[in-house]
Every structure is written in C-alpha cells, then in structure tokens.
Image (cartoon, rainbow, N blue to C red):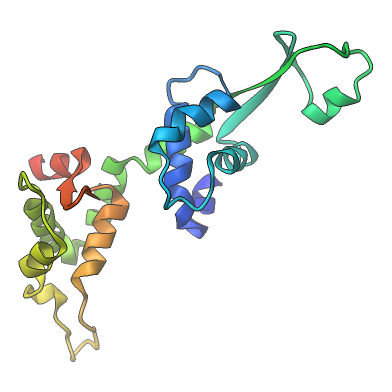
Length: 202
C-alpha cells in the first residue's frame, strides 16, 4: 500500500502529497503539465524531484497513466507502442495521468485535519502540551522556537520520572510532531495552519 511506502520513508510524504493534490480535481493531465503545476509548491527539502515522485505514485497505483495515440486511448505501454507495426511512424503519442481511488484515499489519510487529530488522539498525555503550542503560534506575529520552549518547558509532562524510568521530553519533539502533522508551519516564525486553527476552534 502507498501508506506503507510513506510510513517506511516519511521523506516521501510531502512531495507525493503535493503531486496528488495537483491531480485532485480529477481531470487528466500530461506529465509536463503536472510537473509545471507543482513547480511553485516544490521545496528544496524534498528528497525526490517531481518526475520521480510521479513515477512512484504510478507504480503504487495512486496515479493512473493512460497512453494516447493520435488522441485515441492505446492499450499498452510506450515500449509496446515502439514495436507495434500497426502504428504509423508519424503517430502522435501522449501520456496522461489521473488520480485513482487509492490516490484519493492517500490524500484523505494524510490531510492535515486527519493527521493532526490522529496525533492528538494517539498521545493524550501530551494533549495540553500540544494545545499550548498551538495557542502560542496563534499570535499574529507567530512564535519563535524560544517562545514555544518557554511556554512548555516547565510542564510536568516534559519532566523525567525516575519511578517509571521515563526520560525528559524535549520541546523540539512537540514542535516537530505538530509540523509533521500539519498543525503549524514555519514562515519566519511558527504560525498556525488552517488545520491548527480548526483544532483550537473545536
């Protein structure tokens, strides 16, 4: 499953979701059009380029690739086409992509609202810590890392517990978790996302 692919390689999450989001409207799109569509959303931090990310999604069934010859669907691969004597030498071949049900399920699974709620539900002990960070980031100017550390560092949930052999939990853990889940985003300072705002408003 594609979720397994992301779970085993979390660095793929953001680039794959950017590509899928560009296809979410459901119409077919060429590879070149899709690469151009995601260009402005592509980050230097992504480990894969758009072409490789598209290939990964096609191989895992999240995108469907249909080959057309002179505007008509062709039941075969580009390799099949190249050795097909029934296809004219000057025929125009074009590959178009569309999102599949698997791709839509992947988008829904990793939608910020879903991943943020899953984070809070899976770690009830730290719910107050996460909420304080979200509230601190809700300021108009956002919040610096120092602001967040100051807001939560003295909370009992972060302190070591010798009786249970629990070590101290560092503030960066919560910042990273909320960013990964889509609740906060770095824009010169930490700011709430729409998903983060929805959690606070609930």
